Length: 353
Ligand SMILES: O=C(O)CCC(=O)C(=O)O
Ligand SMILES: [Fe+2]
Image (cartoon, rainbow, N blue to C red):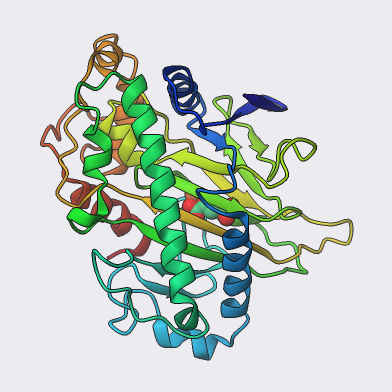
């Protein structure tokens, strides 16, 4: 395991190519302390060429005019319904309470690939590369399943398929979304200096792909400061950037607060002339099947954590965010939510759906 030290943050780079209980423990340690970890790219699970090709495709897509892109606007029937399609510049705010204006970015959301459902209708040039997109989504899901299985092992959950079966896309629909992101260049300093507002992700795991030379991602530290996350923490030893993984709110909630869903944002990285170059990223937001019940995950490790009272504050914060209990209120909201109910509550805050 290589580690990168960046002021206070040390996000480990974990090699999971030979899974073992020790590797599983490394994944759990990172997930329960930082909520973020790097997975060394083995070159096979998600081939670097596919990552490059997807970025190239994304660039071609976003270069089109707003008029063309608006044909497949987010939530429209043409784009395949709720949470699918194009989000225009400033079309959403990831931090609605902290920001007056929407994020200065665009996005395109792609839902589950076949065989679970037919691939949603796609605009050009995405439509002519649907096999690349589908292959990429499938590779991302395979990696998520491997990471979830390692967590399953380290958490000593009696059923070894507890997480993997609940994320098995062949069994039904889920909130899983593959998202292309585009942050246009900017020549003027914006008052907030923020490209994507402070937020935590909604689902189980997020895989994040970024390009060398396009920094900006920052994590909120417990002391309230922000630290940046390098695209490749070890360029001397890692030929391609490792894949950044973070824990989402749902998995944190589901594990009684043991796994951390860390608040992050994207800030402008400005040159001396005050200009910020355009930036592209891609995120695979992995969710459990819609009907999965989020009663606390079984097993002695989480039981010990919950009984020790350690996750209480984390869980209270999450319940407030889900609207299950008001800020300052105690308890309440003991009903077990399904994964779909959990996601719907979060989308409501972002999009007012
Ligand atoms: O673009 C990035 O680097 C991060 C984006 C992000 O955090 C998100 O879309 O949830
Ligand atoms: Fe995020």
